[in-house]
Length: 45
Image 1 (cartoon, rainbow, N blue to C red):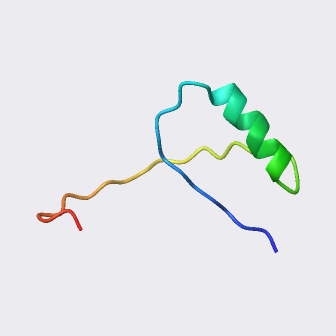
Image 2 (image 1 turned 60 degrees about the vertical axis):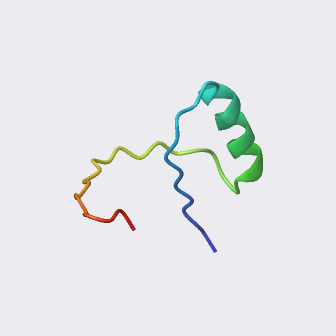
Image 3 (image 1 turned 90 degrees about the vertical axis):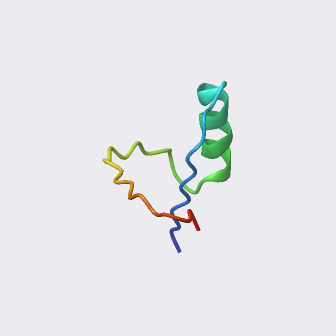
């Protein structure tokens, strides 16, 4: 069963992390273009 794992973080070695992800994945990495929407929330939880 396919799974989507999404992590949002800064990367100092994107290429290296891409190679690691490719080794762990069932198929080749895919780049998905998307636009994120953030909402203000008073307490942040």
